[in-house]
Image 1 (cartoon, one colour):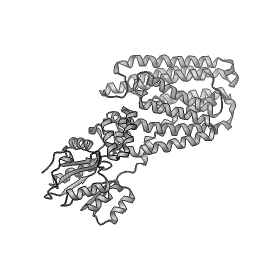
Image 2 (tube, rainbow, N blue to C red):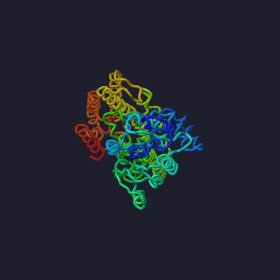
Image 3 (tube, one colour):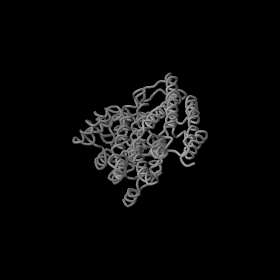
Image 4 (cartoon, rainbow, N blue to C red):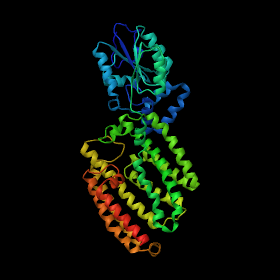
Amino acid sequence: MTQSPYTPASDASGPTSPAAPVLVVDLDGTLLRSDMLYECLWSAMGRDGWATLKAAARLREGRAAVKRALVDLSEVEVATLPYDADVVARIRTWRAGGGRCILATASDQALADKVAQHLGLFDEVYGSDGSRNLKGADKAAFLRDHLPGGFTYMGDSAADLPVWEQADAAISVGASPKVVAALDASQTPAEHLPKAPPYRALVRAIRPQQWLKNLLVAIPLIADPGHGFEALLPIIAAFVALSFAASAGYLINDLLDLNDDRSHPRKCTRPFAAGTLSPQLGTLAIPVLLVLSALISLLVSPALTGVVAVYFGATVAYSVKLKQHTLLDICVLAFLFTLRIIAGGVAITSGLSVWILAFSMFIFFALAAVKRLAELTDRETAGRQASRRGYVAEDRRIISQMAITSGYLAVLVLALYVDEPMTQSKFATPWLLWGVCPLLLFWISRMVLVADRGEMHDDPMIFAVTNSTSRLVIVFCGLIVAAAMFL
């Protein structure tokens, strides 16, 4: 008897009739360009981190118990999951030819039912039930007993090799060369559907373009040119350490924001949201980046390692909780920018003047407000309501005022700094620095205007280096500072 797409496997009434050819499809990495275990894990982490740790503690009861606990804690939108279009097309063709299709997955039964109900392509659905983990040898034994008439199995990983041994034919989807070789060496006729390697997607996910922000570590060196070229090496080390820590933070942020990113007009193309990068691989990359960051910063000093650790901790706190609190998220973003400058000062053991810190506080608060203004404008024009942040479109006016006020205060602080006798003594031609002030006034005003029009990239720092007008302002400011130092 044919089952509905959302009927639990426990309702099955014994072995299935072999009257029609059967295609059995795996979910994670096959039908879905993602992994539901990690989807649920990061969704649960975003909702309740402590409860997620308690769920992980159930590992002693088996992986199936952990999966069931994570499903109960998470909210995964199956309608926006990254399904593999080629696999879906293959299933439709199979059904059009009179065949029957079964979804058999190690993911929890509740999730498998939701996916099947959404797609409407499967006659039967089987998943893990909280005690039995339907994977590998267990899945192979179940399918052998349930489908005595034989079946074709579509999977993706080494865990599917025992299932392919029981199948009449095999279809691999994006399998590794090792799995493909093992499958070809078996007695099962096999077809292989390749996928693009994940390396480019991983590079996109760690966002190397965002490392430009970490050039702020050089500001203490620029503000005090007396350190000389020997200070470049620790500055470079601080830059790299912060970049790796930042990339780990970006991975965490994107994994936590999967549902929201998939409904975003541009962020839906991010690797995790689009399914070009598995959340499993992203999760494994996080500790690797953190170890590299720690080792590089330790080469400079334990103090720098401490600053990098604070930076990463604040980044994680921001991604998990603080970004959901109105205005506090802007303050945290400004703090993270300022920490980069502090890291540069620690790297060259240079004390930072109160002027530099005050300027940093105001200018970065302004940029963080511009970032939120751009997002609010984008949400309003796109008609989006779902967001993990607590802002509404009506907040645009006050946020734009905050950005302008804070930006202008930063220019005032800079003007006072330029007039300081100590500053005058550090530069060859200090009066040239006054030229930076009007350029910054123009730049800040234009940033707010562009963001309010909805014409800005979500991140104003990226906009600053990609927009031609902003690049000209940056170049002129750099030339003025260089002239003040050396002329």
